[in-house]
Amino acid sequence: MLSSEIGRFRLINILEGLSFLLLLFIAMPLKYFADMPMAVRYTGMAHGVLFVLFVMMLLQVAVTNKWKLFFTFSLLIATLIPFAPFFCDKKIKAMEEAEH
Image (cartoon, rainbow, N blue to C red):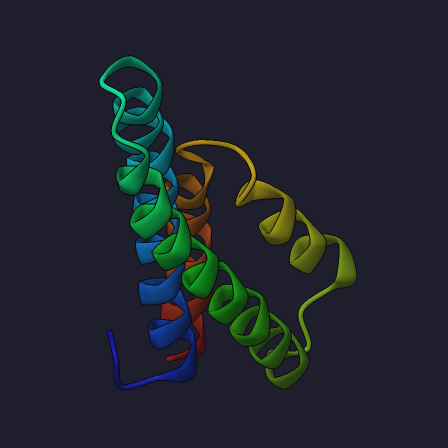
C-alpha cells in the first residue's frame, strides 16, 4: 500500500476519515455531555493536520494521474460526509490496481 503514491494517498484518506469519525462521535459528545473540551482540542488538531495533508496529497495525485476534475472534487466533498472516505477508498483501490 505504501509503495505507490496512490497507496500513500489511500492511507491518508483512511486516517482522515477515521479522525473525522473520532471527532464527531467521541470527542464532540465528550465535550458537550461530559464537559471534556480537551477531547475536541486534540482530536480536532489531529483531524485538521490530516485534512490539510489529504488536500495536498489529493491535488498531487490528481495532477500526476490526470484525474478528472469532477472525480477530484468528489473526493474532496466526500471528506465532509461521515463514512464516505471509506467508500471512496474502494474506487481509488480499483484505480490503483488497474494501473498495475
